[in-house]
Amino acid sequence: MIKRLTGGIYNWLDDRVEISVLVDFVHKQMTKPVPKHLNWMFSFGTVTLVFFASQFVSGLLLMIYYEASAATAYDSVKFIMEEVRFGWLIRQVHSYGANFMIAFLLLHSLRVFFYGGYKKPREVTWLFGFGLLGVTMSFGFTGYLLPWDQLSYWGTTVGTEIAGSTPFIGKYLLIVLRGGETISDVTLTRFFAAHVIVLPWVFAMLVGAHLFLIRYKGISTLDRTDVPEKTSEELLKDGGYPFYPKHVLKEAIVVLLVLASMILLIVYYPLPLHEKADPFNTPAGVKPEWYFLSMYQALKYMPKMIGIIGSGLVILALCLLPFLDRTPERRPSKRPWAVSLGILFIVVNLALSLLAKVAESEYTIGGTRYHFDTYGWPHVIASPAEDTITEAPESVDETEAEE
Ligand code: HEM
Image (cartoon, rainbow, N blue to C red; front, top):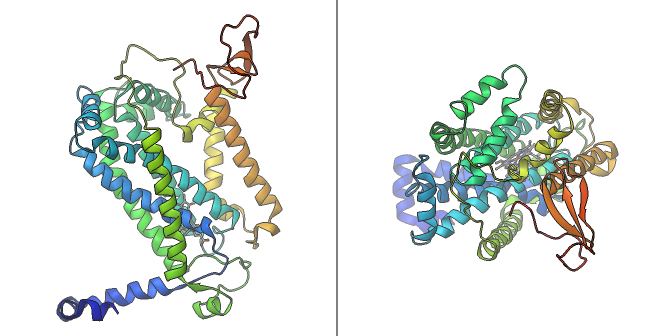
């Protein structure tokens, strides 16, 4: 088909650089069978990949006008948003894209967890994936500082402080991250270098290895790990089907729906650029990005040292999951313990994030005004009779003190 379409050019190239080897390889990959149980949740990895591609392109475009120094960063982002043609769109695509990429990365990891996709013989695929999680979080962390507004400046101050409480090496880690005692021009320069050079290269290598292993090993079936993996012929006999076109179509639909929702959010709820960073004015209720909130909040309930060691152990356990959980079952219905633990993990993280979100803010709930302290516990500050603010007795009102 391809040969007929491209005709002469194909033959000319094939005579010289044997392009047919590449075409046959791609064809083989596209038609490789996938197991029959694949549903739309198996598209989350591809959605993450599409967001990375979008981040790469929008990031390159932003670099045309962005100037990475404390004196110019904020104004250059403002210029991109207000003066450059379609600059606002590119910045929104990049800022929203970062959040979407992390959200789908977490969903993808959960999908792999619940379907036992990390089990033998895909342990190494999981390890490369875990590396990608770390690199993607680091993209978020370093990128957050770049606009140099109040939120990014103070959010990074809090984030680096957490890293600084790591036992034994914390003091040095803090200096390495900040390039000094406080967040400064030096911090911005090293975060920028990490964001646009170091992390993209590491990401490219890890994602290459991850995708290679996925294609090489194929997506896992729901069979136990103590029976041999199915060959392509066995997969087809068992109801599996070629990757292209059915699964590609399913993935394309999910990707398009997700991109469409992002465009809607960009149009109706564009992300703001806050006031320019002011190192001498700490705004109230500084918090890190949503994906760090649960850890940030958890650290408040225990001595810092114990919290950091505890979080480190949880992260290590997740990284080594394929070696800790060596049970042969993959079917979620036959792994009640693993599934319950997974659900508990999600609930605890959501609860901690919610507590972090309401902490150090005021809300009116059912006509009563509450102040939520740093732990997220509510304290009544005015009864409805005394309160002149007469919102309808709805669930939760968005009047945050910090805004
Ligand atoms: C930017 C990051 C990532 C990208 C682009 C990516 C991409 C993909 C894709 C396209 C697949 C095949 C389809 C699917 O299952 O969705 C996949 C499978 C897989 N991913 Fe990822 N992934 C990423 C991060 C992760 C992370 C964080 C983990 C776990 C910690 C992980 C573990 C796995 C495993 C074990 C499989 C094989 C699952 C199976 O065969 O059932 N990946 N990944």
